[in-house]
Every structure is written in structure tokens, then in C-alpha cells.
Length: 308
Image 1 (cartoon, rainbow, N blue to C red):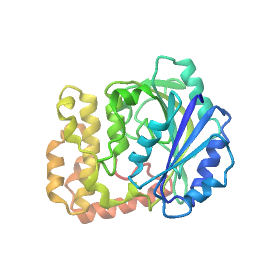
Image 2: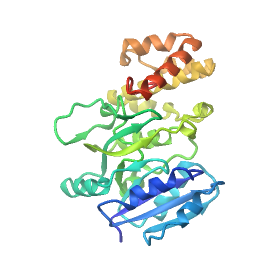
Image 3: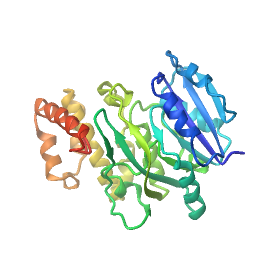
């Protein structure tokens, strides 16, 4: 049995999948299986996979059901105790699995392992900025307090013991955008995160990706499902309020005043900075221009975020 199961959900990424797959096959740690879940691609993505001749690759095909459905399918087919994901347009550095293997051996009681990432835009490569202070090469952190800027769990830069999914469940396929955040919240309520400061993966910003599609904001995570838990968990409450703020801005830009007001009323404004409180009440046309400006600044490493 391989030590790691690497799950790659694949949907219409013919221009990216070769580079992503090569970054997995070029790992210095080689004891892994690769499960590629072709989620109903209509381009030449699957053909690109067939060109690779490596016995560790297992290709599955299914009807299109979204990234969460594909990842869940991969989890069910995985044969290893440690599961990791990489999206079909992201990239691992050659030591990703080796560093994760060392972390697992050095911290055998931990179940969730993650590392720092960098973000590739059309103009630049930007190291992610985190809300925790670096004290050591590794930090055991609370997910919520450690993720007030960039999330310390990124889908393409984390490893999970398989028992976690038996405990908290799988990705929620009813959520169209933010499924990963929903799962990280459920994990963070139970498990601490072992976070490495080494940059081990690169997130490739694709402007055409579904995760950037504004039309999907109506199918995003439902924060109200955590209302009872956040009452007695201030770290969770602050984390959710920051995410509510980001989503509320998107809703206002898209002229969805009803859902905007619902989110706004659920926010404890004391959990937001003065800047975010101001942003929440600005007119939609001003917010739209500010978001476009911040996207441009992010391309040139002058800003590390758009909404947060």
C-alpha cells in the first residue's frame, strides 16, 4: 500500500494538467498513488493523462458533478492512510511529499498537515500572508485564529489522515463555491493543524476558474449552519464574520441587497477592522472599482488579497 493517495479532480484543464501531473511525478518522495478523477471533461484533458506511462496513475471517469464530487470519489477509492489533493492547475515543489512525510513522522499524534503557499498571477508570484506569527519552522495552530488572512489549509497544500473524513464527513456537494472552507471549518472544530512555514506549493490564479465566477456566490457556503457553535467559540465567530464580510461585499457588488442585509446583520462589527466596516457600507459602484484596483495591485505584489 502506498503511503500517500494523491487525488486530482480534473475538469477541462488540458492547458494545465500536464504541468501539474509532472510536479507530482517529480516528487523526491515516491511512495504514492495518483487518483485522477475525470469529472466529465469535454476537452482533451483525459487524453493528456493517457500520454503518461506510470503505474502509480489511476484514471477514473465520471459524469460531471463538480470538484467536491470528484474529490469525494477519490477519497472513496483511495488505498492509503494519508490523503492529499492537488487541483489540476496547481503545482507542487519537488519536496512537498517528502516534507509532509517528515512532518507525519515527527508529529505522529497530528492528523492534519499543511504548509505555506505562493500565488501565481498573470504578472507575479506572491507569497501568501498569514495571520500567525512565525516562532518555529512548524506551528501547531487553531485553524480559525490562524486563518484570518490566508487559510492555513489550502486544498492543494495539505495532507489528511483518512480517519478525519470518517469523523467530520466529506466535501459538501450541495455547495457550489466554498466547499473547501466548509470542510476546513468542520475539521478545525476538532483537529489542530500542523503548519509548516516552508513554501511547498503554488496556487495558479486562473481568471476563468469556477472559483472566480461571480455567478456562483449564490451557491456559496451557508454560514448559518455554524450559528450555535460560534456563540461559544469566539475564534470561529471572528473567522466566520470575516468570511461573511467578504461575501457581503460580493453580494452588494452584484446588487443582491436581500442576502447582503442578511449577512450584514449576522456580523459582529467589532470583529472587523475599521477599513472593512467602511467597505461594507460603500455603494456598489465604488466597491466594484476598488475590487478591480486591488486585483491590479495584487498582480504586482502591492496587495495580497482582493476581498479579505
